[in-house]
Length: 113
Image 1 (spheres, rainbow, N blue to C red):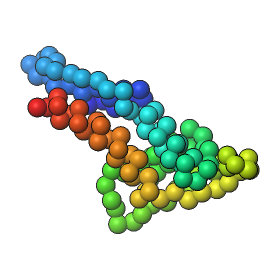
Image 2: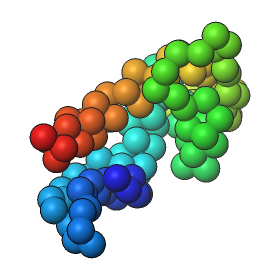
Image 3: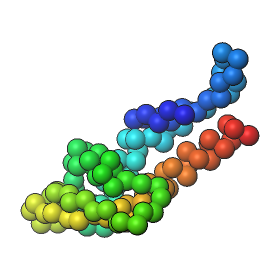
Image 4: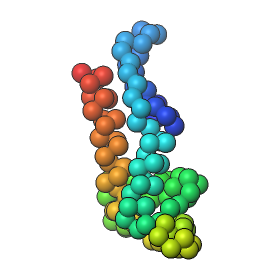
């Protein structure tokens, strides 16, 4: 499985050849867009792609951990136009990530079956 920017490609390789493969348009860029939409909807804050990628790497996780990591993001309040700082936790961003990875898991299961 290769999760790229635009697509996720899944393949079963055996005897030096591809037995079955499938690609879907669920990958890093879509995950970034979904995180951006969540933050804008929840906080009325627009943050840049660099901050989204840093957030994803710092606190993005599919599983719960004992420590609920936090990330401080800086962006522009879409209502006032002023810069703001927000604290985002791993627990609140996890459902956004899980939703996208569930789509990948479904295709992975289909390919393996």
